[in-house]
Length: 108
Image (cartoon, rainbow, N blue to C red; front, side, top):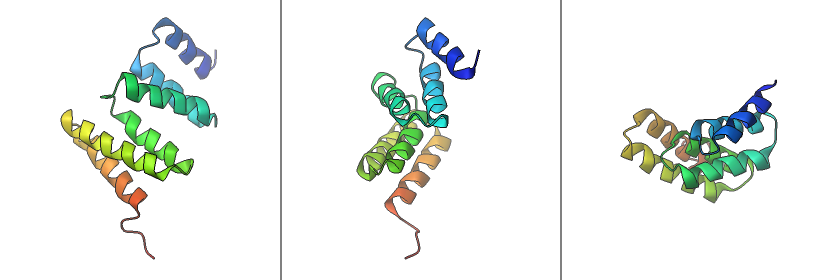
């Protein structure tokens, strides 16, 4: 059984498990299935807003899809959530992603 099939089986057994949903999103991204990855990541933000890893990856996906404003919004919200749950590593990664997306530090 390949990884995707195994994850889908786990998801069927517990469709609300945020770790499995996140792993499915990452697997779909790896396979280039952007629409399914996006659906899982966006669903995680709605159902599990404190699952902080979602914000970075969804922001990056939005950036790749040319949706800069959505990416900025997701990074900012993720920073707030990271502060709320005291995940300073995630906060730092999200702040760095936000600054890069805003073009801070880019050479002109």
